[in-house]
Length: 318
Image (tube, rainbow, N blue to C red; front, side, top):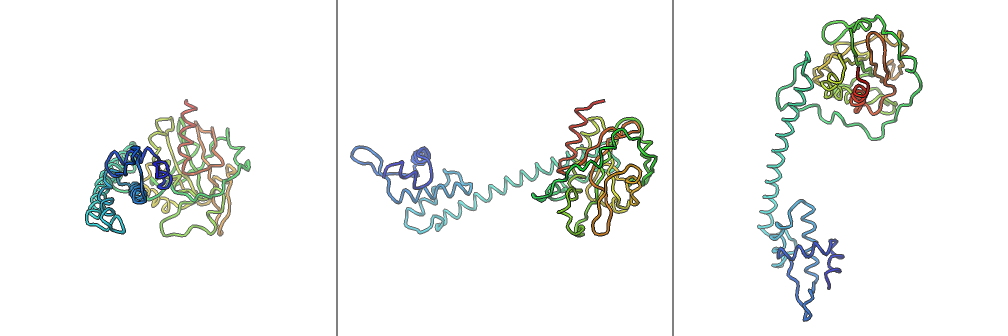
């Protein structure tokens, strides 16, 4: 058969076939007119090269497998030399994985140090893993719609409410001081091994509090650089519950607790009910010099929200 037919049957290009020949992996017969003549064995060889390449083996290292077929074995990895090639490839991957893992650990360390700079919460020890898959969210989460429940907030004075903080202090919202304060309000943060309220994923805007918190953690230093003087998280959960979240997620900022939802009553913040609980809907307040300057509502996706706030701060410098 001609090279075009071989390439078609083996699922490769004619250029690839010529490359295999240049490496000595294929040695077709020559006809009287000097044309190459390929047989069924060549089709088998090219298919084998293609399959091994799909496993990540370089073409140049497929020779032991082709030699195994050439001596009559049914499978290209029936020979000791083929198994040795597998082991060598695995060892190389292990070395690369170890190198990448070390680089990842170093990047995590730098991220933690940068995110916790100027923070009361210390960074973790070098190499400690962050929460696994903290940015992962189900792909089919319902998107919350803007129901206008936060439209009245811009320009509203910050209320004289004093809320307990995970920093063992209280924070008075009308006395935050000059500059911009970012307060992201969220429903509740789940704990590993603790079930969320029934139907949580089906409630628009409910799922994603942990990814949102981790986003503000990872962008914390950038938010300060972009003009935020303070960052707080706020929910109706008790301070002890939030303190565990701060420690587990290594948050560099304090969390405010409003279990009686005084802020909702004072400002008319939107809430929702689930499993007998009344929870805040997700929104973020930018408070500047004693008044609400801007409101993010609704928020989606939550794992990208900190970056949305950062973008807004950069576009609206003081």
